[in-house]
Image (cartoon, rainbow, N blue to C red; front, side, top):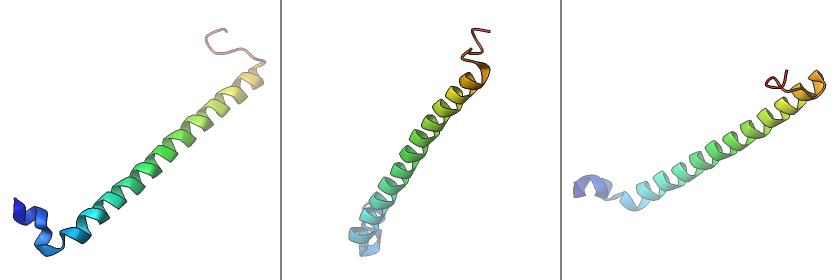
Length: 59
């Protein structure tokens, strides 16, 4: 197991690269989810305005 974690002597370069890639991908995922929720709220608001303020549950 220690041979794997040592990565053939390149662990000092490989593990930080994995960490940086994971942080970047996590940030992209978080940004995507936040943007999606914001746009879903905007779409719901526009649907309600188009209906005259009535929601599907109220109709």
